[in-house]
Amino acid sequence: MSGEAASAKDIDTSECEETLQKILADYSPRDIFNADETGLFYKCLPSKSLTFQGQACSDQKAPKERVSPLCAANMDGSEKLPLLMIGKFGQPQCFKVINTLPVTNRHNKKAWMTSSSFKEWVQKHDRRFLMQGRSVALVLDNCSAHPQVISGLRAITMFFFLPPSTTSRLQPCDQSIIKNFKTIYRKLVLQKFIFSFDETGSTNTHLKMSLLDASVMGAASWNEVTPATIHNCFRHAGFVQENTGPVSNEREELPPADGSEVSNLFEKFARMTGPAPQMSVQEYISIDEITETSAEMSLVDIASSIQETEPEGEADDEEDVTIPPVTSKMALKAIETVQTFMMQRQESETSTKALKLALSLGNCVERVAHHTKKQSTFDAFFSCVNKKI
Image (cartoon, rainbow, N blue to C red):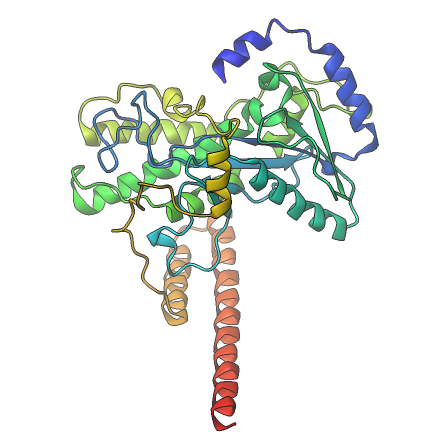
């Protein structure tokens, strides 16, 4: 956060950094994780005039269409845990025919991280790390939604030693990890809008962006954050073991490719929509930087989150976003089209890799389709047997 970043410069964190090195001396880089929440206005475009469903993303009041992703990665950048996405709705219309999401979805009426959701998330990964025979250090800030004690942990040890107003300097996720994630996400949003514009030729038609889109695009954006970026951010936060050498004075910011792509898309968006957006590219990327993601919850809030009900007085605002069922035949046909598209491109490292992935995806879909058909036949057989009995 900008205010926190400014105040952190005046705080002596040398003692904390030394303590960090002592605590982490017993862990390998692959077993040192940092996790942090961030707010995300998932429908936001870089314009005060262009809105999604009548809600301008640059209003002082935070847009209704927001989520709070939890990002977590390890020190050497070799492992990013799947996003935990906190939204306002548990079963929006767009989830009706969806059984598997690329993120873990939870909800409450404020779309904030809660201690119960965080505890569940830690316990889930504790079981996984335990099965892998790993001992993991999880470095956290003193957020009100992060319980200081979670009983029963066997593989994860939580460390809370990031003093207030210093996370912008000492927390790797606050260096540029989350900023990279949001840069890639904004790129995908702009690409989706431009594609919609190219199809309709009009900016008057609202771009449909559902929670399902946010989940898929969020997961895709998180996957694109590179191990080098994550490793660099850990180093600049002081996560340097004694045998790894000094930290370079040069700090890596945004990946040049993604930064330039967003700028180009930003300019194209401005040409399409008329007047130039009243914000810069960096302001657009960071528009939700100071959004609250957690706070002390009242007894009413806690009860509401436990009941797993939709926010009172609010309905799912995505009733017009419906996802039609996709058959295995339709999926395989679509993949075949992608494979043909890639084979028609000029040969390059990127096209060769994409074609390989498309071929592999086709094989995976065929296996899933075969398993589904086999399961259906199995269920039908026992249904018939039960009727005869």
